[in-house]
Length: 264
Image (cartoon, rainbow, N blue to C red; front, top):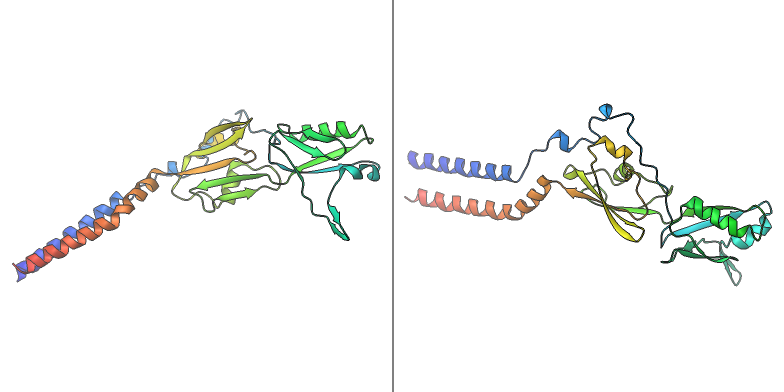
Protein backbone atom coordinates (compact mmCIF):
# COMPACT_ATOMS: atom_id res chain seq x y z
CA UNK A 1 0.00 0.00 0.00
CA UNK A 2 2.84 2.32 0.83
CA UNK A 3 4.49 1.49 -2.49
CA UNK A 4 1.34 2.49 -4.38
CA UNK A 5 1.21 5.79 -2.45
CA UNK A 6 4.83 6.57 -3.37
CA UNK A 7 4.11 5.76 -7.02
CA UNK A 8 1.15 8.14 -7.04
CA UNK A 9 3.32 10.89 -5.55
CA UNK A 10 5.85 10.35 -8.31
CA UNK A 11 3.06 10.65 -10.89
CA UNK A 12 1.91 13.90 -9.30
CA UNK A 13 5.45 15.29 -9.49
CA UNK A 14 5.71 14.26 -13.14
CA UNK A 15 2.44 16.00 -14.02
CA UNK A 16 3.40 19.14 -12.09
CA UNK A 17 6.79 19.26 -13.81
CA UNK A 18 5.15 18.74 -17.22
CA UNK A 19 2.70 21.61 -16.65
CA UNK A 20 5.55 23.80 -15.44
CA UNK A 21 7.50 23.14 -18.66
CA UNK A 22 4.41 23.94 -20.75
CA UNK A 23 4.08 27.27 -18.95
CA UNK A 24 7.72 28.09 -19.67
CA UNK A 25 7.26 27.25 -23.33
CA UNK A 26 4.38 29.71 -23.67
CA UNK A 27 6.21 32.61 -22.05
CA UNK A 28 9.36 34.50 -22.91
CA UNK A 29 11.72 36.78 -21.08
CA UNK A 30 11.81 40.38 -22.29
CA UNK A 31 14.95 42.42 -21.86
CA UNK A 32 15.19 46.08 -20.91
CA UNK A 33 16.51 46.91 -24.38
CA UNK A 34 13.22 45.75 -25.89
CA UNK A 35 11.05 47.87 -23.59
CA UNK A 36 12.66 51.23 -22.74
CA UNK A 37 12.00 54.19 -25.07
CA UNK A 38 14.72 56.58 -26.33
CA UNK A 39 17.63 54.61 -24.92
CA UNK A 40 20.98 56.36 -24.29
CA UNK A 41 19.45 59.69 -25.24
CA UNK A 42 21.94 61.46 -22.94
CA UNK A 43 24.76 60.19 -25.15
CA UNK A 44 23.06 61.03 -28.43
CA UNK A 45 24.94 63.42 -30.70
CA UNK A 46 23.86 66.98 -29.79
CA UNK A 47 24.60 68.20 -33.31
CA UNK A 48 22.34 65.65 -35.04
CA UNK A 49 20.50 67.10 -38.03
CA UNK A 50 16.85 67.84 -37.27
CA UNK A 51 14.71 66.61 -40.18
CA UNK A 52 11.36 66.78 -38.39
CA UNK A 53 10.14 70.03 -39.94
CA UNK A 54 7.32 69.28 -42.33
CA UNK A 55 4.22 71.30 -43.08
CA UNK A 56 0.75 69.87 -43.36
CA UNK A 57 -0.44 69.71 -46.95
CA UNK A 58 -4.01 69.77 -48.16
CA UNK A 59 -5.16 66.43 -49.58
CA UNK A 60 -8.39 65.11 -51.14
CA UNK A 61 -11.29 64.65 -48.70
CA UNK A 62 -9.96 67.35 -46.38
CA UNK A 63 -12.77 69.44 -44.97
CA UNK A 64 -11.55 73.04 -44.88
CA UNK A 65 -12.83 75.91 -42.81
CA UNK A 66 -11.92 79.10 -44.70
CA UNK A 67 -12.46 82.54 -43.24
CA UNK A 68 -11.89 85.77 -45.16
CA UNK A 69 -11.45 89.09 -43.37
CA UNK A 70 -10.76 92.61 -44.61
CA UNK A 71 -10.69 96.22 -43.44
CA UNK A 72 -14.22 96.46 -44.77
CA UNK A 73 -16.09 93.51 -43.18
CA UNK A 74 -19.10 94.02 -45.44
CA UNK A 75 -16.92 93.54 -48.52
CA UNK A 76 -15.70 90.19 -47.19
CA UNK A 77 -19.18 88.81 -46.46
CA UNK A 78 -19.73 87.18 -49.91
CA UNK A 79 -16.64 85.03 -49.30
CA UNK A 80 -17.83 83.81 -45.89
CA UNK A 81 -20.74 81.45 -46.38
CA UNK A 82 -21.25 80.25 -42.81
CA UNK A 83 -24.73 78.82 -43.12
CA UNK A 84 -27.95 78.82 -45.03
CA UNK A 85 -31.43 80.18 -44.52
CA UNK A 86 -34.42 77.90 -44.95
CA UNK A 87 -37.70 79.78 -44.56
CA UNK A 88 -37.60 81.55 -41.24
CA UNK A 89 -35.05 79.15 -39.75
CA UNK A 90 -31.43 80.30 -39.83
CA UNK A 91 -28.70 77.65 -39.75
CA UNK A 92 -25.19 78.65 -38.73
CA UNK A 93 -23.70 75.16 -38.89
CA UNK A 94 -20.43 75.27 -40.77
CA UNK A 95 -20.13 72.49 -43.33
CA UNK A 96 -16.74 73.49 -44.68
CA UNK A 97 -15.28 73.05 -48.14
CA UNK A 98 -14.65 69.44 -49.13
CA UNK A 99 -11.53 68.96 -51.26
CA UNK A 100 -12.37 66.77 -54.26
CA UNK A 101 -10.28 63.93 -55.66
CA UNK A 102 -8.82 66.49 -58.07
CA UNK A 103 -7.74 68.67 -55.13
CA UNK A 104 -10.32 71.36 -55.87
CA UNK A 105 -12.84 73.32 -53.83
CA UNK A 106 -15.72 75.42 -55.09
CA UNK A 107 -15.24 78.80 -53.43
CA UNK A 108 -17.82 81.63 -53.44
CA UNK A 109 -17.44 84.29 -56.13
CA UNK A 110 -14.16 82.95 -57.57
CA UNK A 111 -15.36 79.40 -58.35
CA UNK A 112 -13.17 76.29 -58.49
CA UNK A 113 -9.71 76.58 -56.97
CA UNK A 114 -7.07 73.85 -56.79
CA UNK A 115 -5.62 73.62 -53.28
CA UNK A 116 -4.59 69.95 -53.20
CA UNK A 117 -0.88 69.45 -52.52
CA UNK A 118 -0.41 72.97 -51.13
CA UNK A 119 0.53 73.80 -47.58
CA UNK A 120 -1.96 75.89 -45.65
CA UNK A 121 0.28 78.95 -46.04
CA UNK A 122 0.47 78.44 -49.81
CA UNK A 123 -3.29 77.91 -50.05
CA UNK A 124 -3.99 81.06 -48.02
CA UNK A 125 -1.69 83.10 -50.26
CA UNK A 126 -3.36 81.71 -53.39
CA UNK A 127 -6.85 82.61 -52.19
CA UNK A 128 -5.73 86.05 -51.01
CA UNK A 129 -4.33 86.66 -54.49
CA UNK A 130 -7.59 85.72 -56.18
CA UNK A 131 -9.86 87.53 -53.71
CA UNK A 132 -7.78 90.73 -53.96
CA UNK A 133 -9.26 91.16 -57.43
CA UNK A 134 -12.57 91.92 -55.69
CA UNK A 135 -11.66 93.49 -52.32
CA UNK A 136 -8.65 95.30 -50.90
CA UNK A 137 -6.09 93.56 -48.67
CA UNK A 138 -8.01 90.37 -47.85
CA UNK A 139 -6.69 88.04 -45.16
CA UNK A 140 -7.47 84.31 -45.47
CA UNK A 141 -7.27 81.76 -42.65
CA UNK A 142 -7.61 78.04 -43.36
CA UNK A 143 -8.14 75.25 -40.89
CA UNK A 144 -8.43 71.52 -41.63
CA UNK A 145 -11.49 70.37 -39.71
CA UNK A 146 -11.05 66.61 -40.17
CA UNK A 147 -7.29 66.19 -39.63
CA UNK A 148 -7.00 62.66 -38.30
CA UNK A 149 -4.58 59.79 -37.79
CA UNK A 150 -5.19 56.17 -36.82
CA UNK A 151 -3.32 53.66 -34.68
CA UNK A 152 -3.81 49.89 -34.48
CA UNK A 153 -2.16 46.92 -32.82
CA UNK A 154 -0.59 46.58 -29.39
CA UNK A 155 -1.74 49.85 -27.80
CA UNK A 156 -4.14 50.57 -24.96
CA UNK A 157 -6.79 52.38 -27.04
CA UNK A 158 -6.50 51.70 -30.78
CA UNK A 159 -8.63 53.87 -33.04
CA UNK A 160 -8.83 57.03 -35.14
CA UNK A 161 -7.99 60.35 -33.47
CA UNK A 162 -9.08 63.82 -34.61
CA UNK A 163 -6.21 66.27 -34.14
CA UNK A 164 -7.42 69.80 -33.42
CA UNK A 165 -4.10 71.60 -33.79
CA UNK A 166 -3.30 69.81 -37.08
CA UNK A 167 0.05 68.62 -35.82
CA UNK A 168 0.84 65.54 -33.79
CA UNK A 169 4.05 63.61 -33.22
CA UNK A 170 4.29 59.83 -33.13
CA UNK A 171 5.03 59.79 -29.35
CA UNK A 172 2.03 62.08 -28.76
CA UNK A 173 -0.29 59.78 -30.69
CA UNK A 174 0.99 56.76 -28.76
CA UNK A 175 0.33 58.62 -25.49
CA UNK A 176 -3.20 59.47 -26.66
CA UNK A 177 -3.73 55.77 -27.43
CA UNK A 178 -2.80 54.75 -23.90
CA UNK A 179 0.82 53.79 -24.65
CA UNK A 180 2.10 50.53 -26.09
CA UNK A 181 1.26 47.35 -24.24
CA UNK A 182 4.14 45.34 -22.78
CA UNK A 183 3.75 43.03 -25.78
CA UNK A 184 4.18 45.76 -28.43
CA UNK A 185 7.23 45.71 -30.72
CA UNK A 186 8.96 49.02 -29.98
CA UNK A 187 11.74 48.62 -32.54
CA UNK A 188 9.45 48.19 -35.52
CA UNK A 189 6.62 50.75 -35.45
CA UNK A 190 5.08 50.87 -38.92
CA UNK A 191 3.62 53.97 -40.58
CA UNK A 192 1.43 53.71 -43.69
CA UNK A 193 0.96 56.94 -45.65
CA UNK A 194 -0.56 58.19 -48.88
CA UNK A 195 1.90 60.65 -50.39
CA UNK A 196 1.47 62.30 -53.79
CA UNK A 197 -1.01 59.61 -54.76
CA UNK A 198 1.34 56.78 -53.79
CA UNK A 199 1.27 54.41 -50.83
CA UNK A 200 4.36 54.82 -48.67
CA UNK A 201 5.64 52.63 -45.85
CA UNK A 202 8.02 53.68 -43.06
CA UNK A 203 9.51 51.94 -40.03
CA UNK A 204 10.42 53.73 -36.78
CA UNK A 205 12.44 52.51 -33.79
CA UNK A 206 11.05 53.96 -30.56
CA UNK A 207 13.96 52.64 -28.51
CA UNK A 208 16.33 54.97 -30.38
CA UNK A 209 16.60 58.71 -29.65
CA UNK A 210 16.96 59.27 -33.39
CA UNK A 211 13.16 59.39 -33.51
CA UNK A 212 13.34 63.02 -32.33
CA UNK A 213 15.26 63.93 -35.51
CA UNK A 214 13.38 61.71 -37.93
CA UNK A 215 11.21 63.07 -40.78
CA UNK A 216 8.53 60.72 -39.44
CA UNK A 217 8.52 62.28 -35.97
CA UNK A 218 5.48 64.34 -36.98
CA UNK A 219 2.63 62.41 -38.57
CA UNK A 220 0.76 63.43 -41.70
CA UNK A 221 -2.96 63.63 -42.40
CA UNK A 222 -4.61 60.17 -42.54
CA UNK A 223 -1.45 58.30 -41.47
CA UNK A 224 -2.02 54.79 -40.16
CA UNK A 225 0.33 53.63 -37.39
CA UNK A 226 0.58 49.91 -36.66
CA UNK A 227 2.26 48.51 -33.55
CA UNK A 228 3.28 44.93 -34.24
CA UNK A 229 3.12 42.30 -31.50
CA UNK A 230 6.54 41.19 -30.27
CA UNK A 231 7.88 37.64 -30.49
CA UNK A 232 6.53 36.67 -27.07
CA UNK A 233 3.03 37.83 -28.03
CA UNK A 234 3.05 35.92 -31.31
CA UNK A 235 4.42 32.81 -29.66
CA UNK A 236 1.88 32.89 -26.84
CA UNK A 237 -0.98 33.47 -29.29
CA UNK A 238 -0.01 30.33 -31.18
CA UNK A 239 0.66 28.31 -28.05
CA UNK A 240 -2.47 29.29 -26.15
CA UNK A 241 -4.66 27.79 -28.85
CA UNK A 242 -3.34 24.34 -28.05
CA UNK A 243 -2.48 24.84 -24.38
CA UNK A 244 -5.91 23.88 -23.02
CA UNK A 245 -5.97 20.76 -25.19
CA UNK A 246 -2.50 19.74 -23.99
CA UNK A 247 -3.39 20.29 -20.33
CA UNK A 248 -6.61 18.31 -20.74
CA UNK A 249 -4.73 15.46 -22.40
CA UNK A 250 -2.06 15.39 -19.68
CA UNK A 251 -4.71 15.45 -16.94
CA UNK A 252 -6.60 12.61 -18.62
CA UNK A 253 -3.39 10.61 -18.98
CA UNK A 254 -2.60 11.14 -15.28
CA UNK A 255 -6.10 10.02 -14.26
CA UNK A 256 -5.89 6.85 -16.32
CA UNK A 257 -2.35 6.14 -15.13
CA UNK A 258 -3.38 6.63 -11.47
CA UNK A 259 -6.39 4.35 -11.92
CA UNK A 260 -4.20 1.62 -13.42
CA UNK A 261 -1.61 1.93 -10.65
CA UNK A 262 -4.27 1.76 -7.92
CA UNK A 263 -5.68 -1.45 -9.32
CA UNK A 264 -2.42 -3.30 -9.84
